[in-house]
Length: 210
Image 1 (tube, rainbow, N blue to C red):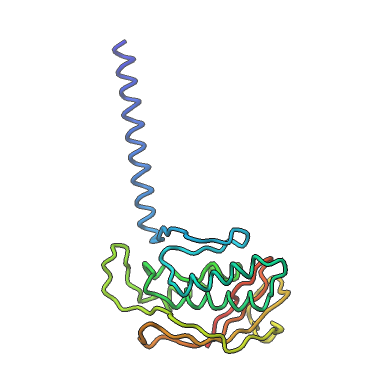
Image 2 (image 1 turned 90 degrees about the vertical axis):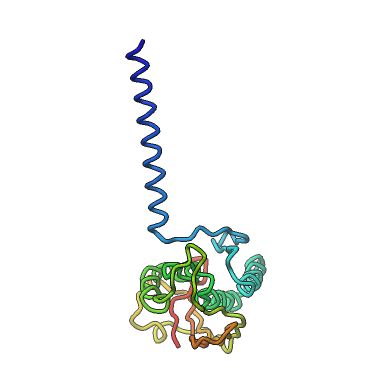
């Protein structure tokens, strides 16, 4: 009986130790990944679009427009592409609500085959100097997009606009030019062009340039 009790106690200790190690490993992994856990407050399930609690009012307002457009029986593709471009710009150029340089905005609107290279480039360039705010004590002024305007939107052939880029298949594409303003002018880019293309059932950003 004593041997059985000892074995049972030993087995329980092993289980507890294993559970503690797994918990610590997961904790360290979450910290190391530097990826924020954000509460989703709105979504468009069919298209896998979401809004988090940290998104700006401007982003949330434009998201409502997207949700309304995508709920129609016949979606206006030009309007759809335009709203995607606006949401992408708002989220990408708003840095104040980002937790670190790894928390790149607008990713959900980026073309699937372009995401990896886009994230790498954003981290190395535009997001490079974003300090970590995991402890909510960042002392750094960062931009917040407060207004956005589409100056032009035209359907295009992609051969000239996306020369040198690799995409498996493109059925429809739009070139959208935009201007935007910040809550405080900190010298960041305030105008640009976005190429939005058909990405299966979605429209996604395939290129951003001045």
